[in-house]
Length: 301
Length: 313
Image (cartoon, rainbow over all chains, first blue to last red; front, top):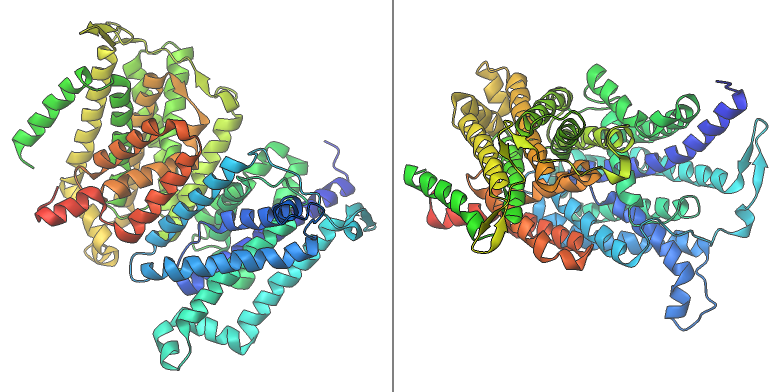
């Protein structure tokens, strides 16, 4: 097989594009897991919801409000979707997840699994499983950029840039600020943090809300690239679980790096041996389990 | 459990196809066996596998393929499917037990996804269509499983039903014996307090792996039998939805109870056949039951009843 540098690089760049989604979603899972000890199965569904907020805001919101010419702007969706989904997440945390704090962590996984089924089921009823295209991509982001070694779509470059910014921003807040130190302390010993007068329940709600908002943000970014479908989340979440097993949920930077790397490896596999590209992440998980069972950045015993 | 209860249940199992539609009963028995196999892990070893469809589904493909294309008799087909699931269980189990708790669930889910991709892409699985028209064949070369008897004017596939019932009884017996053996006691010790079991000198990983293999093989036996009943092995059988369904059946019936998985399977299978007209709303209903179970009903139906009656059921 002829393997030109260009072919490899372009697939790796496209892979990086998937990688930033893995990074953002596994980051959210890690932050939620750290404070709530819950594996948020509904994360994929929240990502899907984010994409649908953008899609429906563009196609249906106007007619619904009696303004048939109104299409929700992409930039508005980028703010609105995380707010809506984040608020939904806070609602879920307050009404349901909170009641599971004292029982086995597996119940959190099961509850969020049920919730994911509900959300996916409802959307499957009203929307096309094979997906709808989102047409709200802003003019500015149309076209391609010359990266020197290849022509790269401007929109994908924007996605990579803004995602990296959000990921490292989150890392900075959690690891380098006072707010983040409360969060990390809450992960280690919530009772002690409470005793210092910090409103831990509020912090837990906001953390879950932030994780949910992050998933929705990723969903909006994904809308113009992938087709928006009710199953986009469930396909994503299983891969992200494998990413999380590989990286370990103990470290934020670990989640980001693992997500980015695996995206690129997946892209690279597309050039080398395309049929393996859908399973390569799972196969890497197998290797990591054999060689370093706790995960690359894992602290778990 | 009283000996008379078992005998009464056995006779009930023999007579029930005269009253209830046999295909429904066979589906129930297959899924109940699947749920019992799953509960051996969750209820008695404390391991939540989120990938059990891999064993159920792959056995269903293996049996279907061998019976359809290699002309194996049904009992050998089911045996082959069961063995395959057991071997796959050994591979998946040895990887998954390297992680614990929540990670165990994620690892099994991800590994099951590999099996799903194989089922989607492999040359002999029929891709999106699955394996259709799997022949039921002639048991031991003597008994035609397609034979239909006319009872009171109704055509009933009794040969097939009694074959499925026999497989179910065998599987249930194996699982029941496993749970109530010294081996099963060690599994419960691991569930209750793993570090303690280790300090008592038990090689915990070997026990876990053994339990995983038995559970996978029995799940495979259920899937293999199912492929003969419906003459179909499809992607649904290996998908994460099916893995979730068996979790729900067990949870709804009662984790770690004797009859819970059967009651749970009965409830879910009934719901599915009664509500087949609502299409994908069924996913919403299943999801809602899941949430209600987790929030208010963690002991499950049989578990709650057992608590009221103050005796194990």
